[in-house]
Length: 428
Image (cartoon, rainbow, N blue to C red):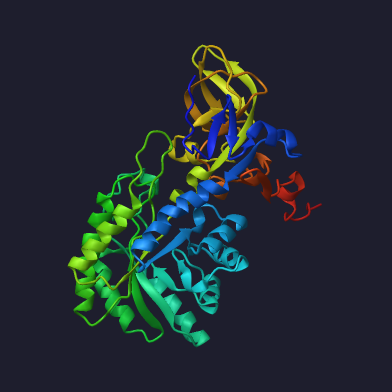
């Protein structure tokens, strides 16, 4: 069979063996004290993805690229993005602490999310972040109260909900009026006027995030048209905004998708701002998946083959606790053998050991497999380890970064005892 890894040339076959950069996956497994499953990242794949956004910075200097930490919050990856010059989009105090830990420039940190707690707001204000993306009036008031208590002025933008269909999975669509995110478009002007009356707030921008895994430019442009018209209305009331945050959501190739041209997207936004006389505005982009999604593979072992009258199952030692996207979104991830076998391929569902019918990682994949084989699940760099759990008391996986022929552990495998270490003593 012919296999074409979606992350080629960074993850590719040489003589029927799967390599990540200059290292054979099989050799990595042999070298490690850690048993599979584990996660491997290609540093070059991440740097190549960043180069696309670097091109935007070169052509449009009034841009700020803020990596969406929720996609993958591993400290080593965050440190890499700091070195590349990225800012950060965060959605929790924990993510802020991670950014501070790696020395991020706090003036490049945007705090999004619908449920910011008081301690998180206080930490963000004391850290001097660039801006809060505010999603409700109660949040606006809470930020103002805490800023007054600290004797500070909070820089804010409002996340508006433009009621635009991003044409993606409903669970990752965020810009429709029935979604929990953002301030209803019809109310946005009134909320801006209200914010302008609060002395503890400094209004600096406007934000709009319509979804994730978006594969067309049109939804971004439709949202931009609505937001630019709102900016005009806001200006007519003497409120001048310095930045437009268009969010993230740029999709990647999991199978045969055609991702959008991000430079073309930025050029189209620039053209709209110029035609509206708003070319001075800083444009913020918040990519996550498009920077790390195709950088990583999950390496797992086939525990056994189970055949029924209806299905053939390849049962592996990784499950929905390690990668929940297929179970949660019915998301597609490629499956590759570490060593290509000769023979007649059989159609398998790739399933894990978790006690749930929904514990599957891929369905109806034609492969030549036998017990003991190593396989990889592709494109797990985004919303893989960051959404992992200890369900069925299964530990978090080890993670390794590959840089050409070097292999660096960037997260140790969790021990079983670590799972329950923080639990209370048994009550007698």
